[in-house]
Image 1 (cartoon, one colour):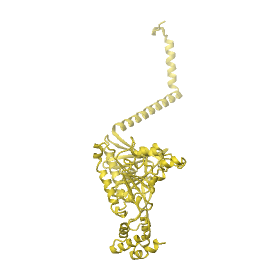
Image 2 (image 1 turned 180 degrees about the vertical axis):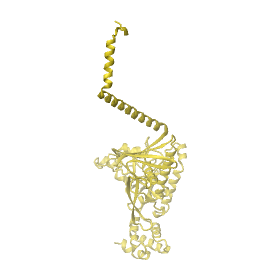
Image 3 (image 1 turned 90 degrees about the vertical axis):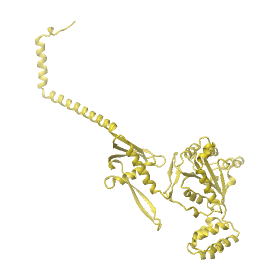
Image 4 (image 1 turned 180 degrees about the horizontal axis):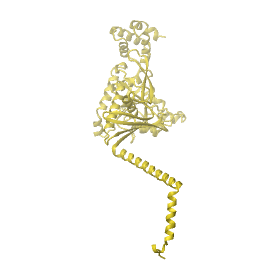
Length: 435
């Protein structure tokens, strides 16, 4: 059935018109309709503003996010603080203790950084918005909460951030100039700084027997300059060294001075760590800090010879879950890293498994024994550089005639008793070592 306008009576139209007129005159209806209209308008305005802000942010700004796990995080925080100067109202502090090079007294210094929140600073001609946030998640290596720093600038080019990162890096490295960094393995597969950067130890301060120190240093320098030679011949580009001999003869001290001489840092791996597994060791070797020497101290304490284990299966129970096979694979397995220098030390070379110290894993084996007459002479001259060499000759002659095994540490300990008195050192040396 079809209806048209002719079927609606004038009375019905009049009733509908009067109904709408009554709604218009009703104050409650008018107010409610107005509120709905205002709410809808504000909602549309809010959404439009949000979309406009997002669009402008995508089209007209560029952002950089730096996570606290990244090495540049601390660099950029310190650098930003230098640009904020006194303008920042919320800052965080980190306290440092350092020694004065002249009087060796410990002084306290403070490093400030922008705290959690939003900060603004001007870099060249650009205003930068820096937002530092902190998450509830904790970094396994440092034990600190994971943080993120987001930098935002007007424009579409990232050059401004590249310049900032380069300047932050240069500023951080200038503070470490002349220092040796010591790394240790964190709980995960990453490395972390251990303690404060150490002053580089002079190479000549460690006195080994004639030619040993120079030969090892020259060998490493030749290795560092021969990467193309290795790659052209398909030889794995890595080098391993084993220093063995009695305790206190200068093995670790020499490695510290050697790292400084070749401008490398030191990454220490404790193979007796109960949390060190084969997989974690592989990751640590692969992610070792660039330009660093991986140091495995007292390697005999981590593993025994397979002959010993064969005769006594329980000889090494309770040691770390790391296996000898895992260490061998990390040193020269398929997945082992290239361009790596590994230095091992031991007091008992006879306890090491032959597979561990075969060529390819250990390329240079060097015995560092008790002090010889030549070493004693040079140690005396190092302590008293202004002294007549004849006095040093008499000192070395006296100790050599005792026919006793003396380590460098023992002789150094004796000379420390007479720091500025070489004649007293010569006079008392025989009685001291004959005790």
